[in-house]
Length: 143
Image (cartoon, rainbow, N blue to C red):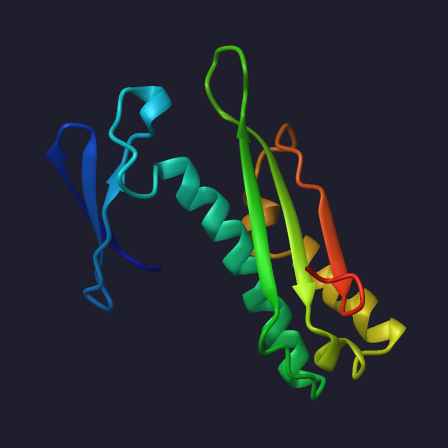
């Protein structure tokens, strides 16, 4: 269990605090939803949670398998519904593994790492209505 305390600062801005570490951040409503768009929106944090969860569980599994994923990059593109109710519709996720890492990862390990990403706790917590297409590029096709 982890406690998060959130203080509403007004003007559609909130300051969440991670109680165990004391780290705070700021959220702001996006410009297209009456905000200033000066920080992560709550739905941006959802997309961030997905990407960081995927790479974290991949990293745990990779470490156990003797694989170093350092330098791997994750890009999540969040898309909202065009019609009400407003909600996240798609989280298009791309993982780019650098060539230096890709050379050390065989097909079986690649499949295992993909499975870990696709079953990370955040992914499993999302509604089935949210599409989460995942692309993993192994070196030669990485951007």
